[in-house]
Amino acid sequence: MKKSNIFRTNRNSRLTFRNGWRGLSKTKKAISLLLLLLWIVICVVASLSDDRSYLLILLISGVSLFISYVTQTVKPTEQNDSMLAVLAVKNGQLSIAGETLPVNVTKLVLGKDPGRGIAFLQLAWNNGDEWQFAIDEYQAVADYLAQNLPKLNVIYE
Image (spheres, rainbow, N blue to C red):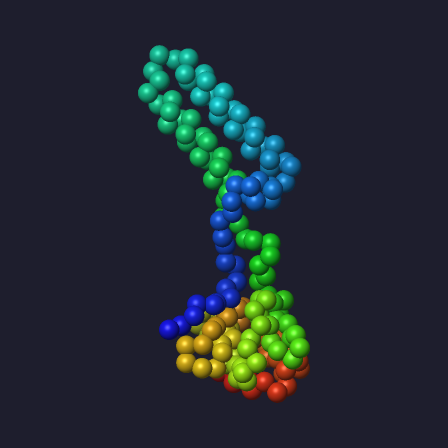
């Protein structure tokens, strides 16, 4: 069974409404509130007409557009694009993205796949955990591992 613990660059996630609202600048908050208010005014004006069949759809679509805008798909600020930013050595043990590897880890596979434009760091056993990162950082990650963990057996692919 393979544990899915893959570090992917540019991975996006959906925000909650509260976090999305906090992440908007003051200008974007003001513009979005003004557009929502304008949409509600349009709904009120439409309700004054004789044909009210589309009023509910108009009202719901405006509110859902507002919520979708605030909770839009964004990149979390705590996620890094750089593998070097998440590598750390604590008490002689390698830590990747806050996860400290076990003491018995003595081998790692460092490889690259030019066809897909990625490099990867994989624990050296069958179906081991894998972290994917930008291929441009391959040499820098190799140098970091060699400099900070000289006893670690790194297999280059």
